[in-house]
Structure formats: structure tokens, C-alpha cells
Length: 477
Image (cartoon, rainbow, N blue to C red; front, side):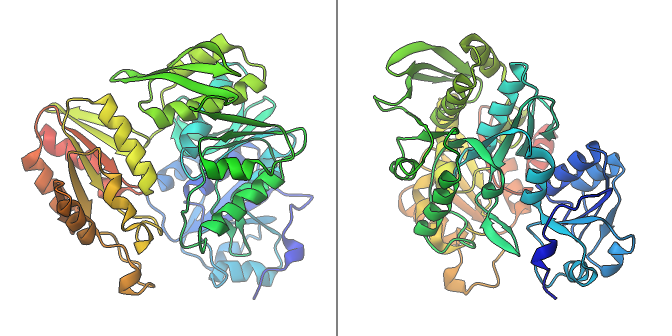
């Protein structure tokens, strides 16, 4: 039974909200926000395990394991349907049969929390989480008390959401599809007033047929910006510049090239962080320092500086906030140092993100051996679409260790990514590369190979079998 489009709405009177797929990162944060706003919240999921299960239990939010019609026995006033839910889900079918009003996750976020705020949305193939976290943290540093929802744990807040009293809502604008009943990108629901566009590349091969389809999604985003809004766009990317040209609002271009509205100059990367000069309309405005290493992080910082300048925040306040920014968990996060070996956790999975992350770490840890440990885990990285691109993505690593991915069984063998082939191709270029079927075998190998001074960069958008903690434990013993 299909959901009735007439019931895709926010009801007038709501006290009990039920979330389908509550253990997702965004859905769990939404549950916490709704509870903080005074609603009774329940949820269900088929993957109920730590850390999200512990987080929800700590909030006292009941979570039912498995999707069943009886989970709706205490009829909720509204159901929020997560992106993981399919039309054939038995609980979603029960929602349709009972005629319960429903919203997607992005709709709920927009209608309950973004309404009435000035929406600052960070979009792009790369850098969304770090850039949005930096923007929210610097707004807080400036006393603006922002609300936000971000896809990573912001160190300054210890969580990935906040309900602030200020006028701004910072949202990480994901281009992934909204729900089974709405295949458009999530960011179209976030009412952007100011939008940062960091990059546009092909990704999400399970959602977008080709690069033109990806560009069409971002064109829709630019098309909904109001005339009194603003687009802050990375003009050194020709695709971003092409899409930004269609905006009906003011556009602020940033980058390294001369002539940008905001230009980064004199970039210096050292073990303690990154320093660069900001030029506005050709005039030097000052030097800025960030603890985050690398050119891409400096450019993300530049985008945030451009937004904060537009919002009227003083340069000295921006500079002090940037210097104090502690980062985001799982973005070049140092998980520990044991026996002189530094273990770093990073979310990078797209070839460009892998390349930029390793380039930044190479600069930050010059003179150290850099070992990249990669787990292909996303729907795109487990497809052959990026097979060749990954061969040059690891150029800055001294050694590459690649795990066998979990197979996308719905695809024919010839359409799947091959870790073994990647390692063979890297070896063919004279690179030191190793292939392992399991995480246990990677740990056994690293335990015998690592030496004081080595830097291990673990790249995955998943838990990677808790490899970070296990490796540190091995080194400690």
C-alpha cells in the first residue's frame, strides 16, 4: 500500500512522533532535537547497536528492534520516515494502512527547526561536514548561538546538533535522495538563504546515472536561492562556476586564483596547523591560522570566512575562532599515539577526498612514513566507476593497505570494485601496496610492520571493525 501524498504534512497538533530508521546518525540527532523541543519520541530500526543505541537509551527514547506494524500500536501523531526505509517496509506499509501523517527526515528538520531561522546550508561533493562544523562553531564563538544539524560530531559541542536561541540554522546539505517517496536531494528542503558550494563531482552512483544528473541536482539548489540570499562558491572549480552563473542572488567567488572576491594566498602547512592570508577584492585583510592541516581545509575555512564577513562578524573574532577550532570527529582525527605510531581516523572515501586528505597529512607529517589503510564501503566506492581513479588517489602515501569490500551482490561481478585489482595496479606503478581480505589480517600485518614515527591514516566512512581502537591496543601491548 502506497503512502497517501495528502498525509505528507506536519499535523496541527502533535505530541508523539515516531521515527522509522531512528538509529541512523541524522535520525538519531533528529530524535534528540525533537525530544529537546518537548515532543514524546519513539522509534524503530533493524540495526539497534552502540553507539546510537546507547545514545538514545541515555535520552530515554524507546527504540523497538525490527520493523513491525505492532510498533505503531500506540498510534503516533506523526511518523518520520528515514532514508533507509523502502516502500515495502512492513512498518511503512502499516503507516499507510493506518493513514498516519508522515514526513521525510529533511522535511521534518525543515518544518520543525529551520522554519523561522535564516538557513545557512553547506553543500558540495567534498568538505560539507568540516565546513558546516566550522561555520557553526565560529558563529557560537561570535555569540550568535546557532542551531545546527551536521553529519559529524562537532568537537566544540560534543554532538552533531544544537538548538540555539540565535537567528541562524546551519545545515549540512546532502545531495543524496530524500526518501523512497521523494527521490530529490535532501538539500532542496532546507530553505537556503546563504549557501556554500565547495565542489561538484560525480558521486552516489547508486542514485545518479551520470555527472549531468549530479549537476542538475545542484542547479536546482542554486535555483531556489532567494534574490536576497547569497551563494558562496568555489570558483576555481569550473563546474561550480558554471552552476553558480545561474544564480539569481549575489554570488561570492572564493579560491586561490587572482580576481576572486575572497582569495587565499601565502599558504603554509606545518605540523601545528595551517596559516594563510585572506584577500578580499584584492586587498589583504589579514593572516589566519587553523589547526586543520592542508590546502582543502584552508579553502573550506576561506568559504566560512566569506559567509561570516557577509553576516557582519568582525575579522578579529573570526580569526580567534578559527585558531581555536578543534575540528570534527573522523575528519583527520588523531585517535591516539602508541609506541611513537600516530593513528588517524578519516571519513575519506571518494578518490578526490582520499587524495586531498593524504596530501594534507603528507604536509603535516613531513619526514614520517605515511601508511594509508583503505576500506571501500560506500555504494559508489564498491562499484567499478572509481576503479581507475583510485590508482592515483594514494600518491602521497608511502604504503597502501586495502581491505576487501563487502560485495554489492545486486551488481554483476564485472560492475563491482576490486580491491585486489587496485593493489595490482598500484604495484604496477612501483607503489608499495598490500591487499587483505579481512580486518584481522590487516591488524596482524600492521602489528609486525609499524615503527616509531609512522603515521597510519585509516580511511573509511564506516566503523571498519573498530580497527582504530584495536590497532592502538595492539601497539600498547
